[in-house]
Length: 170
Image 1: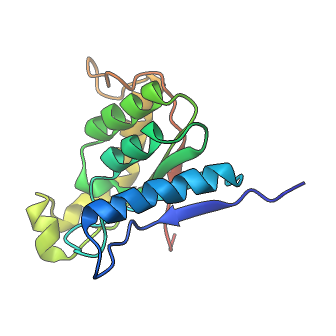
Image 2: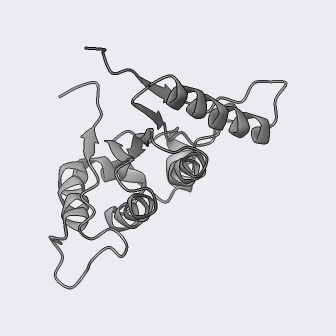
C-alpha cells in the first residue's frame, strides 16, 4: 500500500519573481501533485513577508481549487487568533460548498507575524489565550451546532470541514 504524501506550500516569491508568477507556480505545483498522486496541498498563513504570498490563505485555496479537480486543499494553518471563528467558518464553509470533499482546515495559534503585524491585524497578545474556546466555536459553526444562540455560518453550517490542530508544543 503506498504511503499518502502531501505538500505544505509556503507560496514563496523568489527575488527575481513577481507575486503573480509565484501564484501561477503554486497552481502548477498543485496540478502536478494531483497528477502524480499526492493526497493534499496545504498553504501556510504568513503576514508582512514579501517573500511569501499566502497571507490570504482561503482566497489562495479557492484559486488553486478552481484549477485542480480532486486533490485535497487546505490551510497549514489558519492562525485562529487573527480571525473571528465565524469568519473562518464562513470562508471554509464556502470553499467546502464549492469544492465538496476537498477542503481541510489546519489551525494554529501563533500570530503569523511580528508584534507590529499582529497589531495591524487588530489582534492583541491575549488572543491566543482563547484558542481552545475559539476552536470549539468554529467547530460548532461547521457542524451546525453553534455555541452562540441564533448565530450560524452561512455557508458553513453542517459542512463538517475537517479540523487539524497544528502546533509544536502541548
